[in-house]
Length: 332
Image 1 (spheres, rainbow, N blue to C red):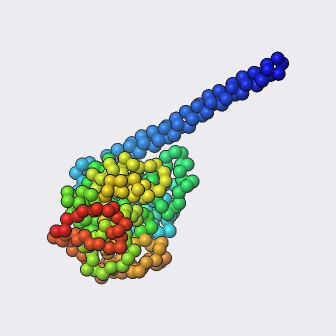
Image 2: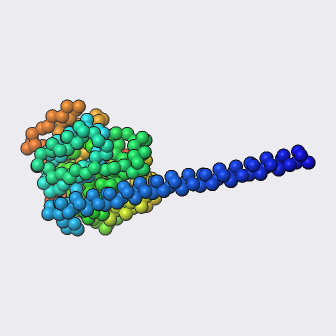
Image 3: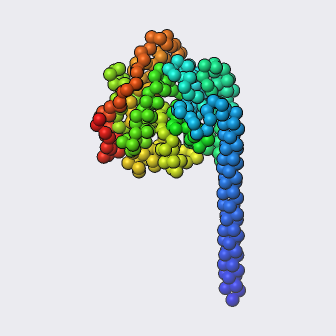
């Protein structure tokens, strides 16, 4: 009997400990969820308030719902090394006065802040600060070269939900634009993304590491989504928004959770409109000469491409087989 009583006491003690452990785990889990929920709620509320204040102060430049241009969105992290080259390239770009460049900085890098604040008045600039959600825990798993998912979402939401822009151009801060980059994206936005015949085109890429001659400037090829410089229309934003994650590789997420499941395709220009200044590729026409030290060609010597009356031509390339099977496009 004493032995049986001892076993019963041990069983009751173990059972009680398991119940206490389960209760503790439930309280801990509820606490973590509440902290994350509060962090996200505070982040969203502060973001919306910031957006409304900025829009109120800039309403004379671009009244909400009446924007006819494509804002250029630049998510910036702790990488001032090449940010200056991007800004210099944008200053050399044709029709810069037709748009506004929106920088969103994560972190407190003073070099980045000084570079943005010293931009000449030739460029219309909006300088935002993005506070990372989850109390910046996600920053432990991100690199300084690839913009965070939260910062990119912040800019896209600002452009489409607050500014009510018809479309937007997203550039990483280590890119160099061609002199006709804005004209190309505006033309492809008008002739492709707003064309109902191209309803299964998700976005227009800007990056192509293969060099092509000037005859290819109006040619685009079916491709995967490439996060190095891209343009998207407002009516595609809900597709991205519905599958967005606060952390992780947002480029991989768009490719695998948006483009492929929806049987859509990205279109890449045969002649690149952005160049990655961190990686050396063959020189491409219409880009300023760059290495680690930027030296620009005189602006009037750079060949200009005219898009008036031009229609895009879809061509097959080595990238096409990587795109969604069964992509249909108009031939004329």
